[in-house]
Amino acid sequence: MKFIVDNNVGKLARWLRMMGYDTLFFRGSDDGQMVATALAEGRVILTRDTRIMKRGVVARGQLKAILIRSDEPEQQIRQVVATLNLDIQFQQFAICLECNQPLEERTKEQVENRVPPYVFKTQHQYMECPTCRRIYWKGTHWQAMTRRLEQFGKD
Image (cartoon, rainbow, N blue to C red; front, side, top):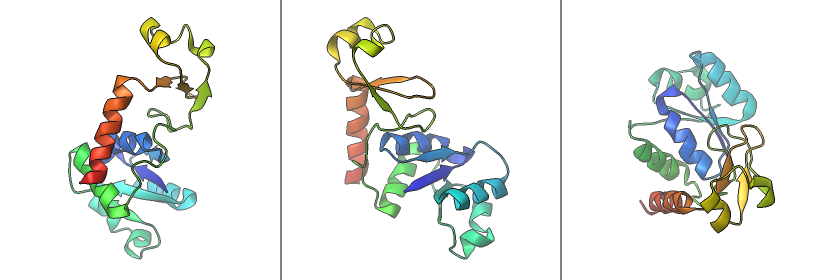
């Protein structure tokens, strides 16, 4: 399942990416362009904008869209998980949180001068975004995010 989110629910994109879902963050202001992108790429629209819900293709059910009720990102992800029965364990940490690109494995040697010394000393698995070059590893931040994601599945 692929998603597109608008400016009203931008933080939701990061949560969905954490779970491995391809989530495009639409930064434009043209609702028609967002709807066209969703149709062309087979994406579910996630928005707080009621006008999008009234668009013909959405109202007729030709394009799936979910009206997000809360302003709080954690409530938003809970709503999406419950509404779509999403798998919390889908492919955690397989997509860059910043630019939505699939992460690639890197060896310890490939990241040696690009991560903090303590991280290099204690971690053995690394992932990198080929677009923004951000490096990811399964440290304490990863563990905390995993626990938070697991909570969403229990609600």
